[in-house]
Structures are given as C-alpha cells and as structure tokens.
Length: 313
Image (cartoon, rainbow, N blue to C red; front, side):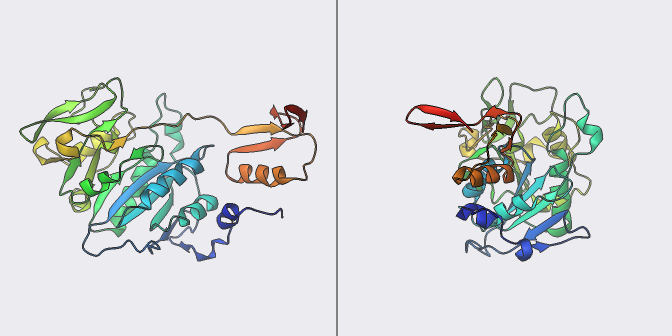
C-alpha cells in the first residue's frame, strides 16, 4: 500500500475499537466515552442530531462541524447517514473529535426519492428520534445540519430548555432570517418569508426540545412532507405558543445560520500515465474521501505545472 499521511493513517486505522451495537452491526455504532474530559454531571446533555449523506463535500463539512462541537461540554452527537450501512470511513472520522457519538445508517425509503420535492433528512431525523426514545431519558434535542454555522453561545442558550425553545436563524428565505416575534416577552407570531399556512413557520435549526417533553408525546414524529417537517413535528408535540421559550436575547440576535455549501458531483480526473510521486497517494485519498477519482480515459485532463509551463499527466 502507498505511504499515507497522518490524517489518512488515522482515518484508516482498524475499526476494532469501535463498539458496534444492534442486530446488524453495520446499521449503527456508538462511542460513549468523552475523550475531551468535557463531561459534567450537573449539566443536561445536548443530543445534537445531524442528518448527512454521501457527497464530495461530506467529509469537509463534518470536519468543520465536528471541530465546532469539540468545544461543547456534555454533548452527544448523533450522525444519521443516508446509506444502507454505516460508512466505516465516516465512523473513523467521527472518532477523531473525541465527542461521544452515535452513527446510524438511515436510508431514505425509495418511494420518497421519486417525489417531485424530496423530503431530505426526514428518514435520518426519524431514526435519531427512534434511538433517543429507546436509549435516553433526559437532556435536550437539537437538529443541526452538517452545513450550518453555529455560535457557541447557542449551546448555552438551549441547554436548559424545559419544553421547546426557539430563536432566530439567519440566511433563511427572502427575509434572510426566520424568527419568532415577541411582545412583552411572549411569542405572538413568526417572521418567515414562506408562511405556507404553517402553524409554526420555523427552520429546523430554530428550535430545541426537552427530551422529557418529547417522551411525554410517544406519537410525535416528523412527516415525509417537504417544507412541513418542522411544523408538523412541533404540532405532533402538542406545542402551544405559550409553551415556547424565546432565546437569542428575546429573539433579537442570530446564533445559528442556514449556510449552504455549493454542491458539485465528485470530480473525475483524466491521467493517462502512472504517477510515481506524491500525487499517487493524494489521488488515492481523494477517492477514499469521496471527493474525486482518476481515470485513464475520461474526465478533466490532469496537468502538472512548473515555471508556468504545463504538461499532461
């Protein structure tokens, strides 16, 4: 095997230290220890649910998010991947951060992939909700996408949620924000550019739920209905306006942004001649990470540049 860099060696270490659980070992595995020494008995645990799916940007975005979550005490990361079985490479990546985590394979049912508007992330979140119902009795649930941006202050704000807390989310729709609106400290409505007759027109990143409150509503779930996932989930919890706990300085400050990375298909690089330099290992790692592959017959022509002159590879 070709010589590997330190990051790739760490990613490719044997998975023997992973604790695989469940009837099908490849459907889920859990790491329950906190290698960061950031576990405090007197603080509720935040269960941070991240739906994800294979793509060129997946490793980069999970790395960025993981290095944000590394700063948060008493946090358990639930990563639900839209794949039939857990990707070992993703599991090894997650171990790097030292965060307790659960990695779940949660493929979208084929029937919904054919919808005119695909309800992305629903199967992932439903799988995470199922795991929480079976294994967790207290704490706080939060849905955080892998391409969103989070202020660390957000975690302090939501940690003591009693029922459902809500707060503004930046970079949403035509208003560039989605937020509850308050009068004298109480929620009186919502400011969102796509109301769509929703009772709770909020973004997925704009609320947190107390797990005890979730468990008191055993039938609460998220529908496979694109655009209405948040609203109908909150309705299924029996939520009322007066139950909402406003955060983010009375819903005047933005602590989370709905950033989105431009998605492109994995690259194909045409390289006709065998390489005997560092490029060989780099190309192997690009393929391993799902970012690119090389081909002798198709794709963008590989070029080597030196002193302004290029030659085809």
